Amino acid sequence: MRKTAGLTLDALAERSGVSRAMLSKVERGEKNPTLAVVTRIAQGLDTSLSGLMGAETETTPVAIRRAGQRLSFYDEETGFERHLLSPAHIETGVELLLHIIPPGASSGLLPAYDGFVEKHLIIQEGQLSVHLDDGSYHLQAGDSFYFQIRAPYRFANETRSRCSYYCVIVRRP
Figure 1 (cartoon, one colour):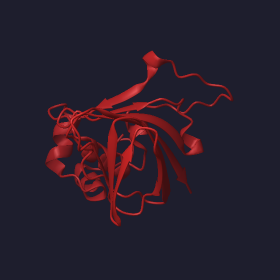
Figure 2: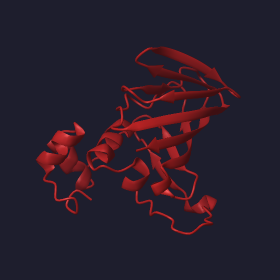
Figure 3: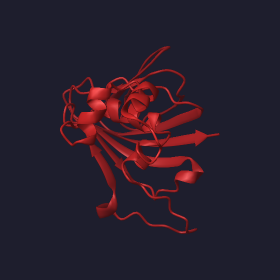
């Protein structure tokens, strides 16, 4: 994607905030990036994380995403899991995800987006802490939460039990 976009490693490093050395190692398959790093790379390439993972835009009015066809990301460092549940109607700006965070782990600090992006969460299992620039919010199974992404943020499971939650991302021009 970097080469298709006509970007050098240095240009992508500047746009993403990820070092040239890390980008080179990721491209060569020598390093598996954390969720925070891969999110910054996607932003540097002007795509969503799902787009970076290979989601192809569905163009039909009806689409099915079978369980075995889900695009998933696993952060080897933290154990954070991200599963794209919805068909990839990327042009609509809406994605439905399932996130799973093991005990004591977090997403790492995730960057703010360019443009208007909001997230809707519903906690399925366990407890989730959402750390925003204006404070921390602690959620339990069954709770829902909404926020606009205006600054870097972090999801954390500060308990001894697994946490899973659904996340709807809405991007608006």
